[in-house]
Amino acid sequence: MQAYGVGGLGAAVNAARANAGLPALSVSGSSNLQDHAAAMAAAGSIWHGGSDHIVGWVQPVSDSQMIQAYLNSPGHRAWILKEGKSSVSIGAVTINGRLYTAMRFS
Image (tube, rainbow, N blue to C red; front, side, top):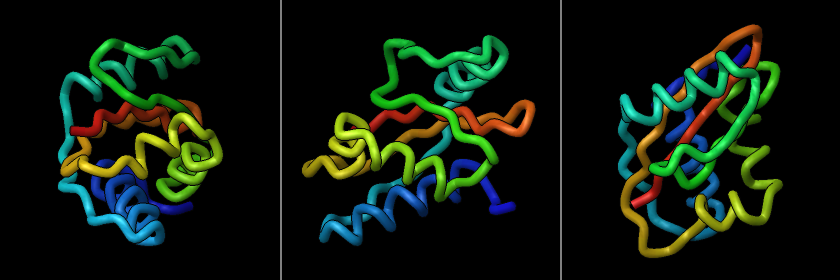
């Protein structure tokens, strides 16, 4: 199983951006987004919490599979590959073999 967490998810986001010829984003954890990811995990569902741009889950837990799932969705892909963004804040939790994430781009 691959590693997961803020650093790994950020690296996967930046790899996707590099493949598209875009600059890397600075990556940080967010307690607010972490709390939202935890609430989604506890409920076994996903929804936008107001301060996020993309939310989702994958199973099994994998940074690269999470970002690939986002890239397979046109709306999520647009956020990851959006020009003019310089940072991404990430909240991520796992429960029952699922990785739940919430991300905000600025």
